[in-house]
Length: 280
Image (cartoon, rainbow, N blue to C red):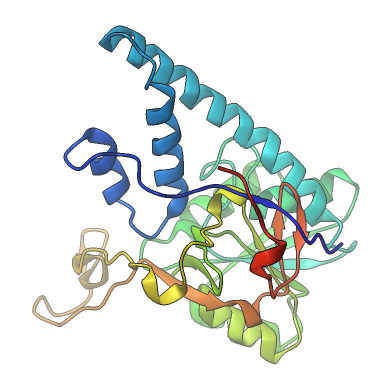
């Protein structure tokens, strides 16, 4: 299914410098959904007459966002399930399930929806170094739901794709610009390998993740603590004085993306700006 129009949200920062909202959005400069949610809550408090009312409005809006998230991800899952065939083995990276979202998930929501349709789907989960969200969270979540899952190291993805062990790749997204998809570090590598071996590479994300006001080069990629690579938990695994580069995300160019799955349909790159309907 190729949809040619979808609504986008403005991602201009509404939070004022020094306020709590700005402090929250600054913790995740790469991921756009956080600023989108914070700004929506701030707008909901604009008509409050006092602090008590502002708190009530903020909480009500936050609950509404959570409820909408479940509904949107269920719709997203239904669209995405149409791309999966009975018997598919799907590889995923990091966590884009009910623990990262609310209840259903995006990338894992697609898998859940396909299973609900009676399709036999198995999952390969990359460990997602250095914080191991894939091994710690994704595998646990899938096993809780009795979904067959096999864990691999991030560096094994090329091997398993070359051996024909993967039919589709589905990942989530933290921000989608005009020319790239930002997701957990390692995603770009998987996209290159998938393209080399003719394996569809899908991105599952709500439209609130889209940021068509910017290009890849304008986005700040969050750098995480150096000790995440010098230590594994409490165990030192590298010299304490070794220089470290530890970006939390990378950018996957649109030409490596087979389709983007949203709650409004499946979109096939390239996107033309005059086809995009912006919803403020």
